[in-house]
Length: 607
Image (cartoon, rainbow, N blue to C red; front, side, top):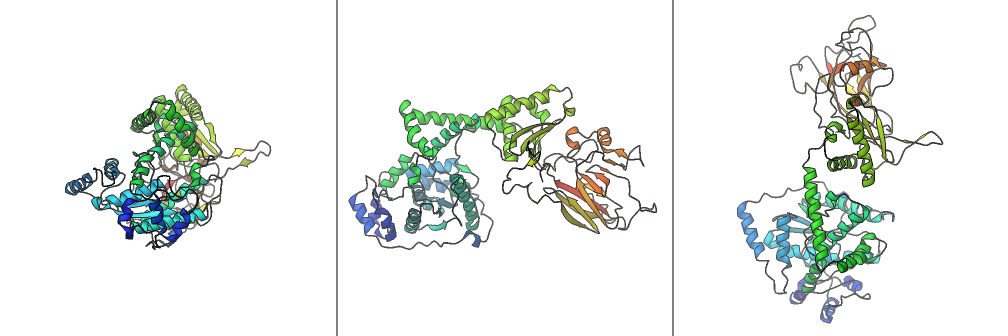
């Protein structure tokens, strides 16, 4: 339905045309807002078709290009733009000062910057229409390049098509380039809102890159922010994360967060602008709609006038301050690629673990609130599991009691806590990490593997080993989810010290050989190259214990094997030089050594 209409449109008839197809959308019951004038309705009926400049084009036709970085603005330009923006702060001929306040809010929150190429997400509702109209009104003062995108989900069939026609007409009248997107196939009704939201974000990012735009702007306003905070409280949320949406998150900006919806509607009515209404926004089947229609009016009634919004705002500000304090605490998460690399036999490099691990010694020294926050963040980022607080509290208490009770925590045996589905938090010694391990069906005694999320970095592959060709007759097999690099060091390159502490070097390999990477197994033994027991095989577990390999690292240390023999314990120890059958040392590659670097390993029990 169309709502509202523009006095200045009547003064600028050539710029206020909308397609006749839009008239069909306005002819339904309750098409015009209660405050819309009959003259405005006649104005819509008298319009003629105006074709939008936008081209409908599949995202897959776009050539990906690098997004343009935000321009560096010097002090002189900032001064010019501030002077231009200050001219907007006073009320205009229609009595609205919203454009000036909008510009001031955008500048103070960095939602977008002067000189930006911005992409406005326009659904056709009052919020997005107000956003686009405000951007157009300040684009000359701020030197903005304004583009728009409309997402047609096709769910409401005729109404969705009418929404698209309306937005095309609006953008044509405002001289804004429009891009329309539609999904290749309809979304399933289950969890529709989340799927549609993610699709819109993905499509927006692709379009931003194609256009070379700086930021995508959304029409969320202060009322949306209040709803978001209440929904977080209803669903359960940590105190430090109560704060709602931010004015700028990555490539997405929300410059209207400080303005209530009534201000936007009044602004549109002052311009006599039209907009569309989505019936799904009033459907009681969505929790957000019930919060908007039932809970918020009740809370406003129970609290003094204006007190409810101010109290919600105070709560979100305090939550944001708490979040800052927690973020300032050094993390105990040793992320992938962050652990120190060493060639010492007493300290093993753990930087190749795909999801990293938690240093329990450092974690145990933190306060309870910080421990809970860091464990929650690690599990959420590594496994994609958002633990409820009562589960988090129990897990933290058990893990802390375990880490602090043992006189020698480094020797603490393996302990597990199943978080959800296939995901388990495993603790050994002074480390804890998440691992995907199957549940056991008590009836069949078979592993039950849950569904894996698409795009899980550790789920690629079919369960078979990956084989790569290292050159010079050497192949290397490794489990799926691992990532390795190889290079050959010849006599001419041995003087090059670049990367000397990276990886393990293997020499005197057979002319044709197949190496295999794996973790340790019961009964493993090898002949260390430098050992008092040289020439004699030793048990791997005894060698690890004698050489100070931490308990938590022993089952997660890659081994390089040739046939049934271990030729290297990554990255610190190699076995004695292999000999041919007649006892002579093999050197078919004239002294060339294979340099093997393990960049990433998966410790999942399910591959």
